[in-house]
Image (tube, rainbow over all chains, first blue to last red; front, side, top):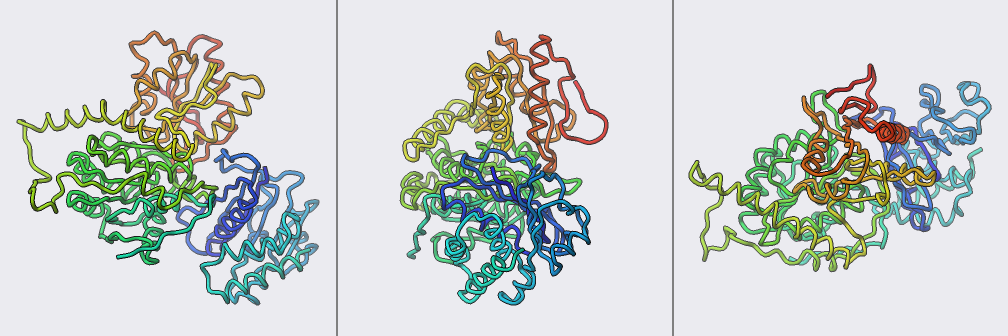
Length: 185
Length: 407
């Protein structure tokens, strides 16, 4: 079982990102689950979304999770909330920030001794899509860190997931995914 | 007017809301009257999108309240159409008056309820308060534990409700957020196969049949009211169970997916069992399969059909089990939980020596963890070892503060 927790603000696309990732993984025959908790939260409120991936049908519906990966797609949440809650020794963190990994760890002591990667998905999204929607670039970074799929295979499938959007936006998302894949460290 | 068919992949990653919306599209509903409410909004929103994209031939009526939504459904159903809608929680509460009308008028409407807590305090998350609110309304009630089941049970419900021997409306329950907003793989059925399964709608006593004028929504006082209600109950008790069984069986032939009024998992040779509904059934299943690997004789029972309550099947399933926990996800308001009461009724006046304890859990979306479930089985085993229920008969799981126990 692979488990992922997303930390986001409502409106940044964590739910869409989690569902998109689940959709792509599902095409390879694995079983998936993507869900979120946001209650009646308003745009901008802190929220979490989740992915589970397994070879068997996923029966577990508990909200409690010890994630293998934590995605932080809003820079401030890495500082103002505890994104390391319920962690394992092996939990990996991919954080959207303009800071270097080193400076981020200095700013958030809870990251000391943990496997932390950084990438500026907000800036990448602004440069490419034109809006600060950091969800798809985060998935590009995840492909690099996890080595889950070849990036071309992933982009091909994300093209299908995003098919309802205008072609210009889809193309911009593909550039954003590739940039995050190349820039995460 | 021509409409388009939709190409689906064999497995689509859908949440429970989208699965229900797709099923309604494929069943070719004539009229949907909708007033959206969290967490069921995406069902009617998704349906409206299908309508806008020319995937639907029927009418989509936006109304001013849930009371009006069901009232519109009643009118359209009496007129002679295939009719459905969706709601949750407060919306359902406002709809309740018309629910009783729909059932009493024998109108085969399909209602998707995405289960959510009832205020106050206001809460949009999942529990079964709204399901319990309308449990005596005279509707058939199915319960889905996953998006796949929300999809499948919609088709099954149309088959059962619209049968001319039944003509009783159906509710399909699914857990708010835990099913409605959780995307999972759903095995799809093609548009044509779904439509063939539910069949073309055949009206009965329809008001638009001007050759045969009928009256709907009549008044009956002491002289006839009781007979109408008794006859309807009689059909629920004697006709509907077999019709549900037949629909389950035909659906299995079509898809290989087998549904039962009472779903049993790892119940062969089980000493202790949990009975519950919704997504909890699946989480408990996962714990049970882990505990079975350690040689523990544990099982789980999920209630697929809430009304008509499968009295005989529950009694038969549980009669030889040594200890059972009944899990109710609704505040009981000064009584034992519904499942506790129904299970007691199923086994009273029998030789069963089962030890039954009731638990209230998960109100307002409070998590039911695997650790909670393991503790529960430990408690049941302790009861078996002692030969009696060691605790009070009603306890609460996962609530903060001092331990609560009653009865």
